[in-house]
Image 1 (spheres, rainbow, N blue to C red):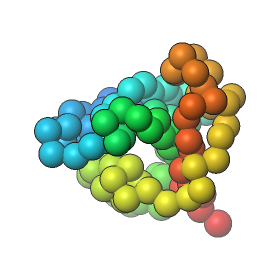
Image 2 (cartoon, rainbow, N blue to C red):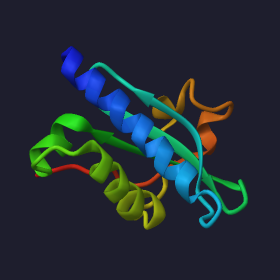
Image 3 (tube, rainbow, N blue to C red):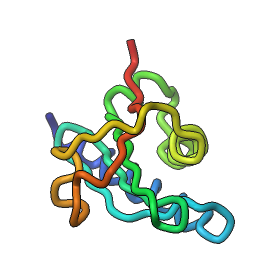
Amino acid sequence: MSSRELSEAEELLRLLRREFEKRSTYFAEHYVAGAATPDGDVTVVYSAGGGRLIFGRSWNVTELRAAFSPWDPEDLAEILWIEDVNCPNGTGRVDVARAEGLVDDPASVRWVDTLTLE
């Protein structure tokens, strides 16, 4: 846990939000809320299907930094939006704890798989 992780997480969150804004006219996904933690976790909650569906996705900047070299947050935000937001995979499991404080009904958020590097 360091200020580097928090700073990188906040920057990535800002850039991911910008990716949503750039594409909001053409795509169904719209940014709802987000958070960055001192551990380097980035969480984004977004709507799809005309707002009927709420999805969540999380990443960790330490894991991302290890996988993407050189570290370029702008390029990474675009990649994450295309690969993980626009084309999500996973079961859409419920994880109320991750959505606490981000939306009014945390149980309504369907979490898609997060990037975990083995």
